[in-house]
Length: 336
Image (cartoon, rainbow, N blue to C red; front, side):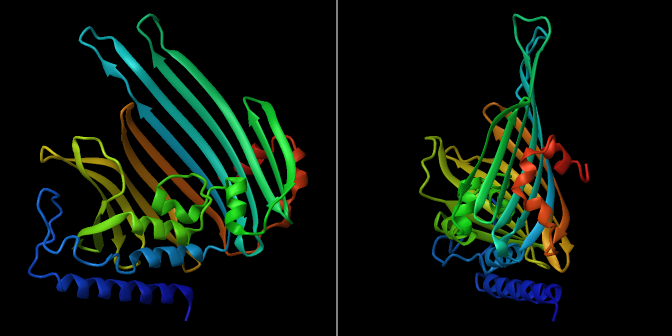
């Protein structure tokens, strides 16, 4: 039986468990409106019903990969006054990351190129003030050695070699390489220094089940976050996870805030698109909206899987290439 067939069977089993559990809640109505209390809410065990575990197992199947990631972030905090004067900032950040890893041999190569641009509208300036900057960095980890090279606006910051532990989590902690296996949990490309199993355990420990619903091929599980200090006007913070019942792939998350005045506010929300590579599901796009005090932030991420669980070129893990000119540009140019 191939990997794809196994994943379909697991997905069907997870969905069947969900339907059996959902039937046990009847005649309760699993309302998505947080203003209504769901019968049985808070009185049942943590019912992610295997969806979290299925997503984790799938991501842990990524043993070797070469992935090119493009992320665009737009933040708009401008406002228009009655006199027609625009104030505030427009921020646009673009980054390209080439992430190559071989978990079975504890080898990693990460090349990152970032372009940051800010347009600021000031009351005492006739024209907007535009500032920009470029940052490059890379980490290569191979044969108990770590090499790193950082460039900010064309100026090398440092380059070094040092020993590192063979422990995978310790390696990620030291090198700060983004861990794509956790993208569906954190919804952003940030380094993680903890094992995905521990992260999932921490997630479960910090949320309590509230309600569940199913529409079409999508299951939505709603949880209340606890152990978090909230503003005085907020009664509770909730997080909703969506899963595709055909594949068990996580397809989105939404943060929801229940206010003490009875209203609800939707906060950060993300949608994830998946595709099949060699019978294994991989994320290919992430779209996110973040409502911040500084304004609305929109994030679009595209992931191009150049290879998955295929032999990787030995040269990409060579520390000697760190001395090469325009190394980062060369590595991220593929597929751009």
